[in-house]
Image 1 (tube, rainbow, N blue to C red):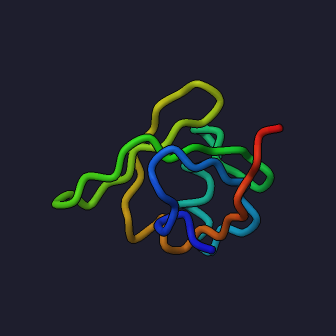
Image 2 (cartoon, rainbow, N blue to C red):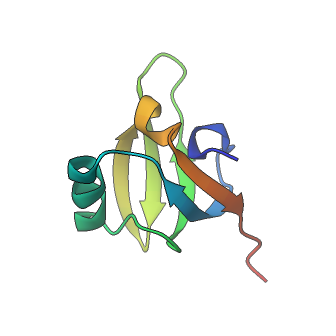
Length: 77
């Protein structure tokens, strides 16, 4: 499943990032890497950005980049 296909409020764990090395480095500075638990906070219909929550921090990411990030749904028990 892709990060871009999550619904608002769903949590997921990042399993794969298929971006270039520079983009991966930038994402790592925000705490976005393999094994990171994220939550989709906001997905505006007419915008090219997704608002995600990572460890209490709110970060926006381009939808085209989110389509290259593989995730699996995370169920918080």
